[in-house]
Length: 232
Image (tube, rainbow, N blue to C red):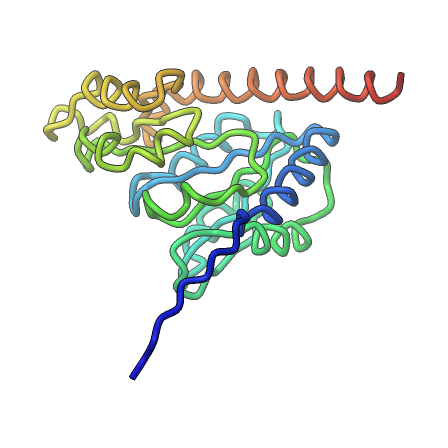
């Protein structure tokens, strides 16, 4: 007969990971690397968004990508023609953890990247609970999923700072309302920045990249003030 015991530990079991994530984020800030954690359900268009972002910036930005997947490196292969990429294979786990991200960083060429993107596992539940040392968490919601996902998966939208609505070229053919999705998400995270895009045509990509540039500049300003304070 199997017995179950409940142990009360009275401490946050993720406290160590949170401290390490904060340290790593600070190190990224000091180096000028802005880290973006892309989360979504499977097939929402994270890889296509990264392809469009890399093509838009071309050689004007130094970027790298850590690609999370359960079993294959197919998404990483799509991105390798454009940017340095490292594959993070979980072997079945439904989310990326910081330790896996750190191992991927060790394999990337040692360059001062302006942007590091983490393409998380396609899952709107578990990735919301793990800090990967990102400065910005972006949830990608495709028009083929339905506009009711924010209310159904509130934690993912509550812990994100931006939302990309992808595959907008399909809007004439699917029952999806951009306004309804934004309204639903705003009830959960009222400060969420939103970007309707179509990665295949490039629609909305300039605004998305401009937002990232502005966010990185704000990070650099904060890091600069912190370094001045420490120096004094």
